[in-house]
Length: 112
Length: 150
Image (cartoon, rainbow over all chains, first blue to last red; front, side, top):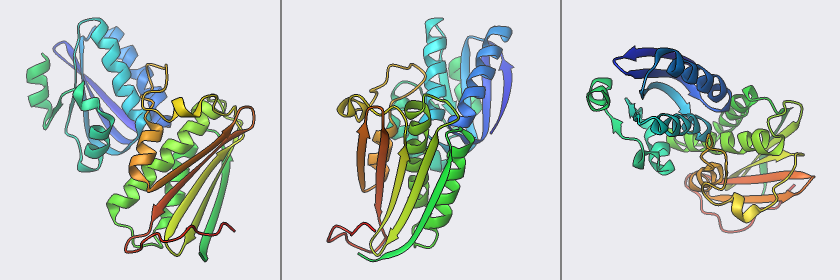
């Protein structure tokens, strides 16, 4: 799994590629938390367009970041969800907390 | 029910082996006429069971042993994930959604397993370990009787 993290205004865009499972979760968590601190971002957008597999470990990273940024008044959004990921996202109920958009631009318009 | 095929895979409780288990089971299951959606569901269920063994059974220590057995019968694919970890103190609570105090975990492993597989059985004993059995009925078949375990 690889991550691409980019700052956009006061949001971090986190583009996830590959399998978002237990192995990926730990370093993903660390990388994002570090960037949040060093780049002073308030919001996070998870672009899942490159995700080939996700389970509750990957979802846990997203949820954990949501709880973290919410403490500072920030927001989290998800975009570009592939069809194979949609069902597990809906089943988890995470979409009740975190809005899902079809594109990065649509998500960023709401976040920033 | 007649056993058509079996695979056993034993590995250390390292996070990279979750992917190994998914690939092995998905490859084993290609003998059956599952569609892509079924295979994805089986992969998620296996991923959840193995991740649970690592995170909860062995508390993320990478030195535990996890055994994954796949049995292919005439009408079902049965996957058993076993660990010799600490066991589950309150199984009823563990099977509930969100039954986990960790803010980084969703506590939905068993919910996903139950949603994506046709049957899920869990056995656990404190200090001895946990055994999770996942059953998927084969496409085009109807489960009419309990299969014999070999």
